[in-house]
Structure formats: structure tokens, C-alpha cells
Image (cartoon, rainbow, N blue to C red; front, side, top):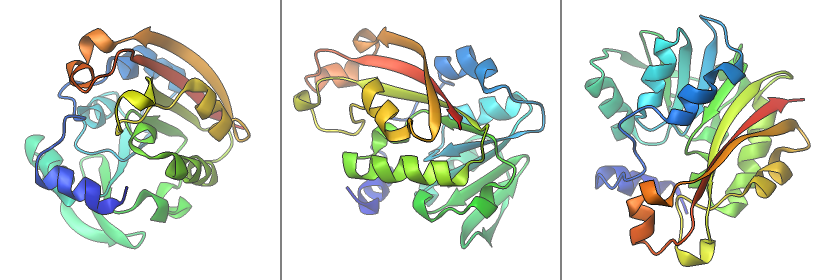
Length: 218
């Protein structure tokens, strides 16, 4: 899977992964992030998620990074945000009303761009990546975040043989293997959700579990 895959998805508006409402796990477990008003939350592979708006409404500043310029332009337009595109950290960036939105490769993001960030929210980032990229993702996040940083991570688990990702099946055990050396990993909730994911059922998936984890950087 390469960047062109995601560019094509956004160009063709094949964005079944996009949700129109803030994720219920974000709202339910937001307090576990232990944020303070005015703090900054980083959202990797952010798309045009309404979670960004919800986080902003909680008094946080939001930094997002997304490959597709279409996604970020849609986010700005749909939320009536006006911003000027400049270049920061070597990539296009738009700053507006508490949002800093980078258009580029997550793996090219530097710690300078995330200076002061202690909070991360991942709803669809890890599960969007094939196995060989998930190891890089975990290592890069660990390199970007200082000790004490907290991350809310939402993932899915299903029989991978029943359909190709994304979203990929990423089990709790795999997450513990990927992140366990650098993060404390705590399971917050795990639920059967196939009944509410018709798209996955239509793809032949017979079992689907969604779960949320709290990760704390050691």
C-alpha cells in the first residue's frame, strides 16, 4: 500500500472510513487523557474527521496530519474555517482558529512540529496501515513523544482472512507488542460491533470487535 492508494480514495470519494459524528470512545474516555484547557492534541492521519472539531470544543488546540489535500480542504470548507497555507516542518501547513493541519507524510513529521504535545488520539491511523508499516508507526510515535504523553487508540479485530484491509485487523496483543517497550498499555473497553458496521458485514466479515486502549509513554 502506498500514498497513491489514499490519494485515489479521496479523489474518488471512496471514504467509507469517514464518520460524520465524533467517535463515542473519544467522548467516553476523553478524561483518561488528563488534558488541560489550552493543551495540544495530535491526531495522525486525521482526514476530515469530526473528532478534530470535538477536541477543539473541549478547549484543546489540535494538530493533525493528512496525506490528502482534498481531505483537509474539505475539513476547512465544511467547518467554515478560513486559513492561510504556508510551509512548516518542510510540508504544507494551514493554521486557523486553534488548528494546525499538516498536509504530508506522517513519517516525515519531526518532533519540532509537535513541540509541547503530550496528547495523541488515534481512531483510524494504526488500522489503516499494513503490518510492515505498523512497526514504523509505533516507533515514530515513540520518537516524537516525551515521557508521560498519553494516547487514546481505537482499533478493530476480525478474521483478517475474511477480507483485505483497510481497515486492517490489529489485535490488542499486536498493539502490546508494537508499543509495549515504550508505552504502558491499558485496555479501556472491548465490544462486539459487527451489528453496527454493515460495510464490514457486506465484505464477508463474520466477527468484529472494536476496542479502545490508553497508552502512556514511559
